[in-house]
Amino acid sequence: MDRDQFDAPRYVRVMRHPGLWEELLECQQCMGQGVCEIEYGRPDYRTGSGYIDTRSGECPACDGQGYVEPPEDIDDE
Ligand SMILES: [Zn+2]
Image (tube, rainbow, N blue to C red; front, side):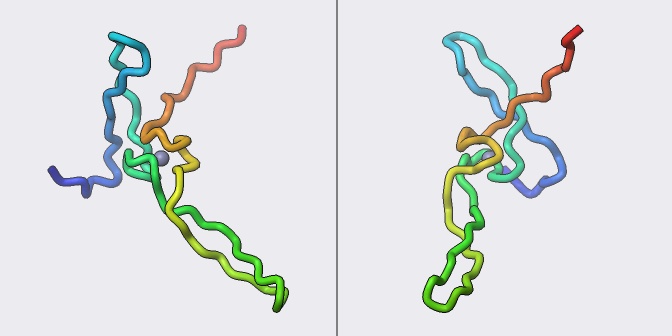
């Protein structure tokens, strides 16, 4: 399997409700892993400066689920 097609949307099949499979868009930020590198600030209180570091953490784009909800049709009328 090659995972190099970054521009091609991929779908994952998930069962969020018993017996109901749904095809949802794979999260592009974490490539469906639910975990990605997150930037966070590390203030240095001694010098008053700081820097941006990264750590591995729950993907903020998909809440660690590895897939994203399809855009809902806005139909409030
Ligand atoms: Zn994600």
